[in-house]
Image (cartoon, rainbow, N blue to C red; front, top):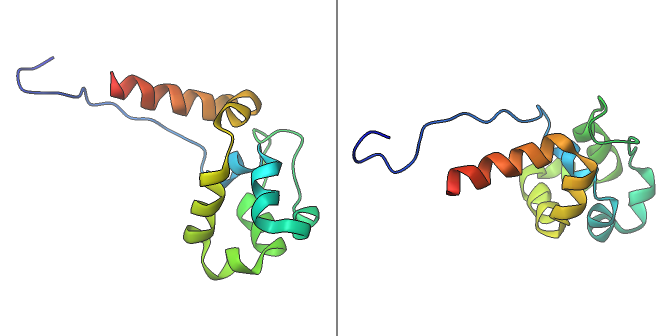
Length: 102
């Protein structure tokens, strides 16, 4: 490590649609969507190719109006352990972030 450098530079790649990770926790989405959660197309695995932004927008008008604010609401409800178990790419992302903290 060069003197004075507190963090090592690194890059972390993650899924093009981070909303796909939301689909790993149907309960978190259901807490925000209520009955409309039945209209969301959930893939068997969040690792499958899917269009999560489209699925959320079709089921949830609020998501269409304000995707960032709505995504934040879902993210606050996510069960991180559940998402890590269902999504290897999310687990790799969390591990990379944890490594940066060391």
